[in-house]
Image (tube, rainbow, N blue to C red; front, side):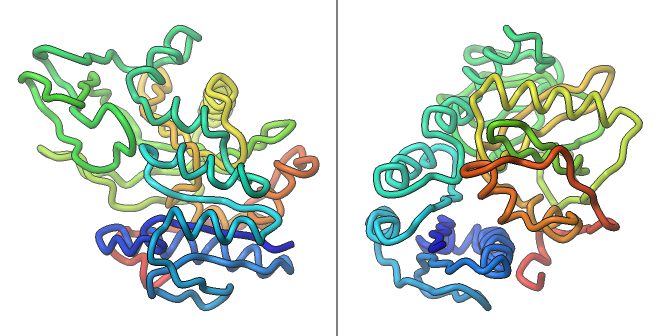
Length: 298
């Protein structure tokens, strides 16, 4: 098959997120080409060691043009724009990621949290306007919440921000693929630095937990409620309960480790979620630790 893999930082030339974007794109491209597929990817100049680069001067235009020539496509981008970009894919070819409506729901952090809470998924108390006092994490209310996050004991929320009650616990994520059935891949530890700011530094894949079955059950329910399809990452803080704190309707940096430890190719699983049947389970071999600052060397 001819596959479009489009990663926003690489395809739009966003230097700030280039290391993470290149690492995710490289991981996916190596898997798809290793499975015998022809990979095309838009880029402003950065090149992979596999796949066919397509010069990009406008990311949306590149998506539209390349997707017309491909059998299927997957786009990875900040959640606040991912819905519109996914629609471009769906107009022209088979979408290997989450549907646009699911992406937009996950991107709206307040709406997403409220829907999960109504469906008995543990979520932290969330404030969307006015003042707050206590121990909270303040973050953007829409889009990708991996940046501009800080911990605060009091304040007034600025426009476009929400405050969620700080949960003292283990920072984990569950990587999951959804098709006709759901396939949990790994539970991962997130390396989070918390002082005034909250920063993501990397991850350990997998991270085995005595409560692994509970974490996977919450992740499966969350993905189902939000209509996720394909690869998704469910961020969880494990305390007295497993609290869902973010839902990523796309490949995340954890996929770098997931692809290294799985006993199956991640590309085969992504394609099976769209065109075939997912296996009942997957196995892992060893573990992999990565640091955000080292991604360009992976």
